[in-house]
Image 1 (tube, one colour):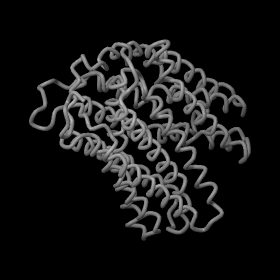
Image 2 (cartoon, one colour):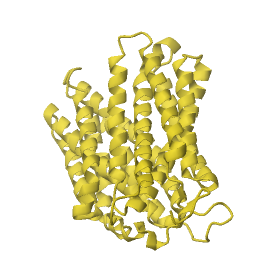
Image 3 (spheres, one colour):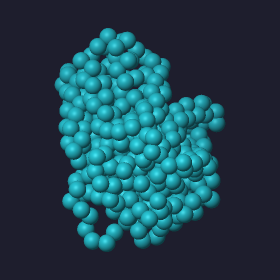
Image 4 (cartoon, one colour):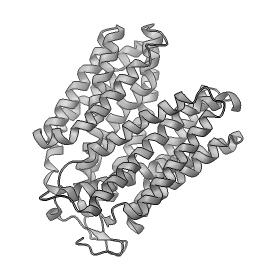
Length: 404
């Protein structure tokens, strides 16, 4: 972009970055706090798995709701509403309610989770279009960094009886604060005309399926490593309780570093080259985990596996939003749905393979799923020109001049 971005665009970028951070912080707090409630409520691991599945299902619904809200009132409204819904769910869970209310609160949380996932990506693509260069990696880096902080907050408060409740309360406060600021600072532009004025531009269904597949693979990998890496190191490789979590820690650090460097890398090499290199690195990492049953090899392999997740997720939303800029919000909401299918697949499929042929070999499944992306990588590059305003992107603002 020629010249510095306008102050209002910079404010929008900061506000959306805060929304990504609030999402990552809240998710980490919820996931890491959940086990502390199992004893009090008398639920087992199967019940916890069902609750996680409920969250994935309602999150898909939240993504659909975000699409509807974005077309009606703009994605900034959908993003603020999703954060408020999450904050309400955090507050209820923090109070330690009876089991039926506890489960219902997690269902509500899923709705907010899906709404924020979709609408934050919508906002990110809008702001990126104004910058005329890739910045989605930085948004997702804020998510990952905040998730690490959230996990550390829960771990640090573990010695306090009400520690999980305090962490959930903090997540609620953060979500409300970001939503309140965002109602003024989120980007007011719309990717599409208001309802009733939308141009008759067909949805790019092939592109939605293509980038949806990439998101599916990325989150299958993410869920698989998140769920099973520590178990593999502890149970199969007998690494010990102190060493086993290092695989997941290395994986998260690799994601964060990749996301911090993705935007600069695409500016230097182009999206296609970044996608190919990131995907190839992760395939090597997963093969390393499967082929060498050694602790150090597994930790290094899990770190390398994080590179694809770090790059593919922001670049998929970037390229998907450029397929049909006038209907970008709808495209992103649909691509986002593949997120939750991947989360379920990664946790379930690798678990089914844990006994035979074995959990180590099971990590070849996401490696095989990554291979087609090497041949689809050129599709990321083709979408670059469409991010420019001249490609037909609409900028209908809520009561503002579309040219602003």
